[in-house]
Length: 68
Image (cartoon, rainbow, N blue to C red; front, side, top):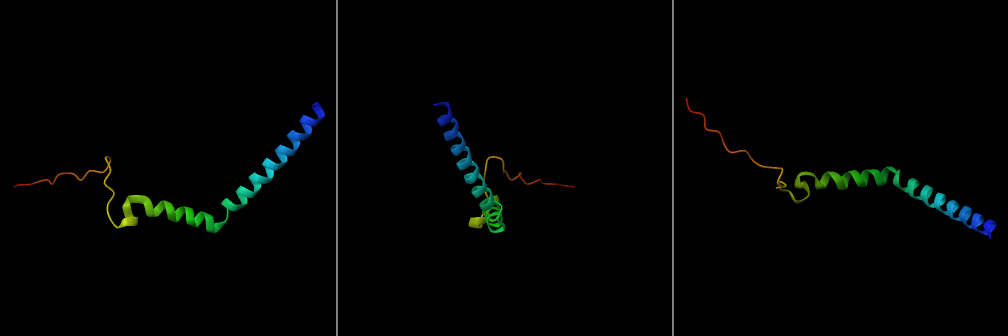
């Protein structure tokens, strides 16, 4: 029984290792990195829709009137 459990654990760890290597080789490809960066940069500042992102952190300060 113990040998069977150990053998199943070896098979599971080998499959996990192969899945991890497959995932890493896909994620370090230049095309995947560039696509990820493109997705991130088009979402910054509302540039994807051509407008300014209005969020609670972004407030336009009131105009300052200077008289002399």
